[in-house]
Image (cartoon, rainbow, N blue to C red; front, side):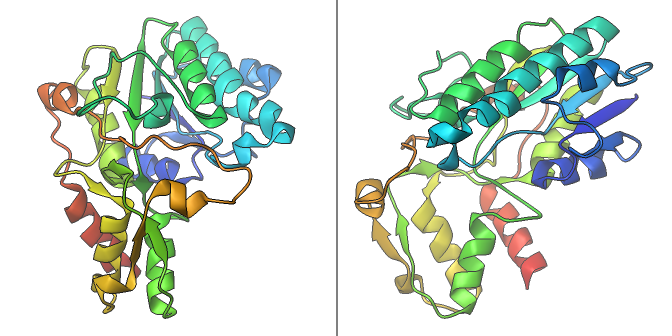
Length: 281
């Protein structure tokens, strides 16, 4: 199988490079997927699968009107260009999306077919990108949450705060599951290599959902600090008086039944967190 990874320099991109070691790995300097002409000019000959890990992920910065064009270019236009190229050249497309396409008001785990209801500019851009990806027949749209891996992320931030003696306030009313970037990449490889039916799949860490504060407490105790050093606050309290903040969904728990029925069982998010913390020690 000949694969091309775009957005190969990010957390997921690096994990995909390990799962698809023979793939052509492209960061933005190698292929700017927001440039329609560049995508059209790329030599897609012989490519079987396009793995799109490129995205604008700065949720709050997306709220700035000055960034809107760049957000839409990365999360909507680029997906359309890649989908068109994949369709024209007979490739399949894997596109990675987010639970931010939903408003977080659904009771219980969110199924793949729930209509989008984004709260933020970022969420709307991801929902519109999903529409572009699903416009072609041969696609796997993979929705995920709270990704952590190599690079800057919440766990690394909390570990740094713990090591520096800080005592942060962390929200306890946003509920979800961490997703290990390596586990996410392995699940994507499973879908591709087993020839799972095309369509939309939720793919996150498994296990009992938790809040960001719960995750922070686990990080603190792993670094030798007390869980009590993490102060629990509501989302409204945390962002009170702060400008330019994107609204967050409070329920980020995605239903994993479909990916499990396809033969892939994601690891418990707590196990993934422990593995990441071991790598950080």
